[in-house]
Length: 171
Image 1 (spheres, rainbow, N blue to C red):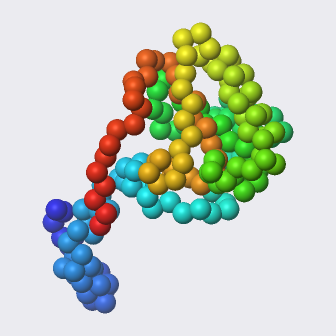
Image 2 (cartoon, rainbow, N blue to C red):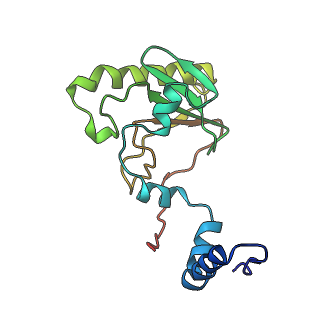
């Protein structure tokens, strides 16, 4: 646990608020200092219309784009799990916050995404040694962004089985 900060030079009202936080939230300091795991993020994620991936698709957030057409965008993951880790998203998710929301009217888009995966694999030279596709579905599947997306992982031997059991301590 961190030692209490000095309140010297701070107004008495601010000092009182800080002292209440430290005295009543001993676990607060610990939680704030430790970055959340992907599992914790997935269990806290909510379905929303304007996700980080929607913003990347609209070019409001920069990314390293490796493929783009009228329907989709592929970019390098900022926290890669393999030497090649690319995220492929539909530019307009059309209600596809997760794969279980797919309907017959999404068939053309989903098929297009699979064809684009093959193009990206060839472009990234993953097509000879192999690669893995991952679509995370819901909290237990590790989905932390509710905008359908496909992870393309390669460039090394990938282990099997891919998932590991992690106990989650809900606080």
